[in-house]
Amino acid sequence: MGKVLKRPTRIVYPTPAALVTCVDREGKPNIITLAEVFHPCIANPTMIGLAIAPQRYSNRLIRETREFVVNFPTVDLVEKVDGCGCVSGRDVDKFERFGLTPMPAEHVKPPLIKECPVNVECVLKSVQPIGYHDFFMGEVVAIHVDEEVLDENGNIIPEKLRPIVFVLGEYWSLGERVGRYGFSREKGAA
Ligand SMILES: Cc1cc2nc3c(=O)[nH]c(=O)nc-3n(C[C@H](O)[C@H](O)[C@H](O)COP(=O)(O)O)c2cc1C
Image 1 (tube, rainbow, N blue to C red):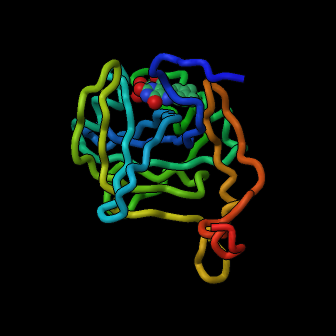
Image 2 (cartoon, protein in one colour):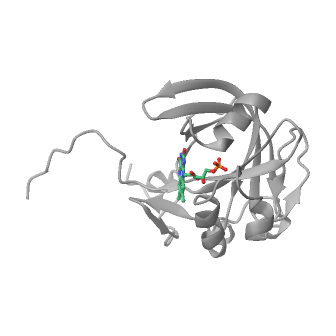
């Protein structure tokens, strides 16, 4: 079988879905669903990229207050994730509408979402218009992790994260672990 050449478009492979929180100038919080959250390969500083269309209410809020929190939901929150991506914070309070609980962050004004096991506080570093979206680049300033997803040494237990991943317009959960970084060398295969 040959390969079919496709024009450049969103690639098939999964990206994590996230609930991104931000605040207006008075501190009122909002939530936007983004299913394409990018981690450029930079460890120090750690950066996160978000593509947010200019018409989104959250686009204006993050530009104005220059902070956001990326909250990673578990699969059981999928309806709330979809809901937060179908209505605007201009019209509704999404914390109230979807029964999500705001918690104070450590360094930024936007709240963490309690129900999400991992919450990443970010400070906006740049905004770059790209096509129909603006690309927001944020620096990670703190990460919160639920105790329940940590082992006794404080390491995250991946099975407990149960993230939602987005593939070609659909929500998926992750399957089985098939290896670990460097395992082929340990087996003598590399
Ligand atoms: C699964 C999913 C993924 C989404 N991804 C994006 C995205 O990457 N960028 C974007 O601008 N909007 C995205 N949206 C749409 C926004 O979440 C939606 O327009 C939302 O209502 C905007 O809220 P706001 O006006 O309160 O900011 C997505 C929606 C869903 C359901």
